[in-house]
Image 1: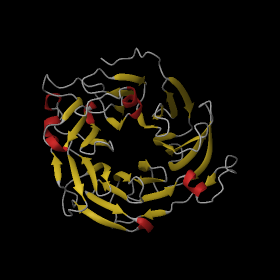
Image 2: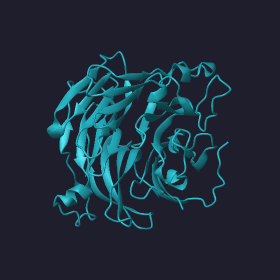
Image 3: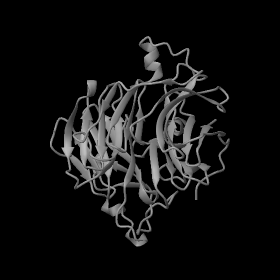
Length: 364
């Protein structure tokens, strides 16, 4: 049972949108009163995808379009850093852009935006069957760098470097499939895919993953499910040895490299009575460490998993803490496809809902 009786509930702002929202991310802002975000959209009437940057007014009730771009197909993954954001597509292409804040730093005047929407262009685009065949399952940008790692349904793991070049890290030749990826350090990253499996890669040791977690112990055979899929991965910079993952059947767990085959279950449906009861029984689309809740509990033991936020197909947005009842922030009648915690102000969370709307939570 999730906790809903918060001492002071968050302020909730709902903003209807004219298109389906696949993913959403905050962008860095020079002021808390000049927030902006990027979203990947799909117009189901005309079957046209788009990538759009909007500004948010101080009341958090009105958005203004600033920049837009039409990708070659629907966006499959969207990630951002303070200086760049990357979007991959279902056709297997990858496109990297500078953030508006970075463009302003470099001398491009953004002050005139806000009337008609301007067109933005990627600084890097990688396309072609040599790169990926079919949909790219996940991408991640390295903090403070320009490298981007991509993983696909084709079993390929690619590293995109500056100026649009790339090198193959691994090719599964279609025998494996990857759906999520996250950098752990400038030379290490984690991938996830079918079977709740996770793989730890080190670019200094090429050829294969240096560690693997086989998620057979998480498969829910008592519910008729023999496998699951990892949809999202996060790694906290202060604890890079521990990987947080979310996926099918409400499963959220942590993988500690020091105990590689002993996952720490935070939420799951399983055959064992000792497993934690799931907050959600559907797909967990995204997981992120929650810096805001961590700041409220600064005395968290180094042996415990840090608080995490999740969103799910059955409309749940909640915070999970190891050994505690989860705290439910939203319970929507539709899927929450994506969310993002503002790095500059972690009390603010932006969510994209299946029913063509954005929800912004401001926690006290």
